Length: 67
Image 1 (tube, rainbow, N blue to C red):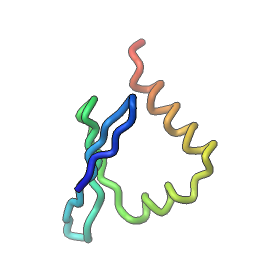
Image 2: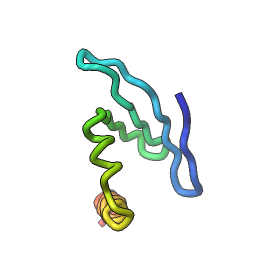
Image 3: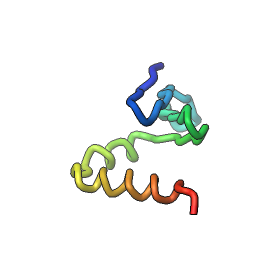
């Protein structure tokens, strides 16, 4: 479908059919991690404030950081 990239990440965005409708399949080029998001998850993301989005990204980056 498409690739979304910036200086620190590149993610493929694909439509993935399931028994309950289509989902977005997100695939990180850097890590290979995958996520399937349905309309409910996407709607919830739309409701987040920029501060909340920053907190989610920060938590994910810190979780993936080597200790």
